[in-house]
Image (cartoon, rainbow, N blue to C red; front, top):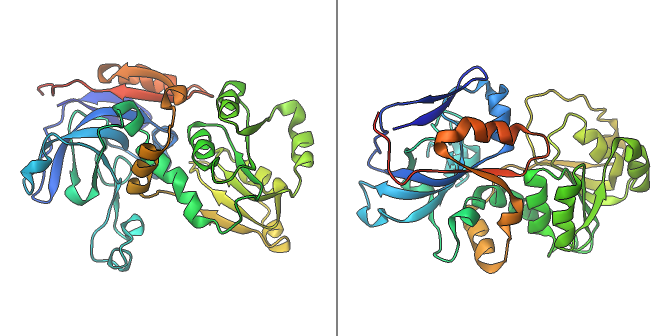
Length: 332
């Protein structure tokens, strides 16, 4: 098979042996995969990553030793693989397993390959009415929806999403119905226009108006969702969150951040980390809501042109770049 390899900020197309599924695993063929900001951070040195990246995809089961009836099904995958024995796993929380593997991120080859394996327990069947170009958003949508379970506020509370990147825009679309007083703050007018088209209030953050905008919303929002992925994102969130408000940190970065934590203490601010969500909840959302993912897609590339696709995804302000996989596997 063919696979993408990240190694010391280089991208290589390699030909490793086909993976063999263990008795409790399925062999999967990606249909469509998405390049996300985490992939970019891994390329830039996050986790000192070397290996096959990629974790957002919709795939087809091509082999399943334990349950042959899964063969041919379209699935999405929970990217966290627990050990099954640690305290977190015993509490049914493999997302925080002490020894977890994370697809395409930590100790588990990812989906930017013609074949990959995952435990059967991590697979979720995609309903027939959800096409591939929508289903590929299930994993980031699950991460967006996870915020709802972490907040204990009224639906009328003012909420800010800081950052109109791929995740910030998706968070805004996922939360807008439950929280009508949501404001998306970002630097890209084309992305803000997508949110505005869906009835979301937006604010364009430009260098010349940054201080004015932060002053306008000074200590205003009950919740600020920090999705910029920038070193100064938390500082901006602290400027606009209300006393006894909540800041949700939603993005990771390979850069260190210096923040004056005194404001957290003086204003009694809650700081919440938010990572993955429930795939079943995301699939249910996609079945029940019309999410126009075409507006979120920047470009699509065949797998053989992955390097071009990744260079496109690296462009500041780009939307989601998707990878389309061949219907058959290349020989090594």
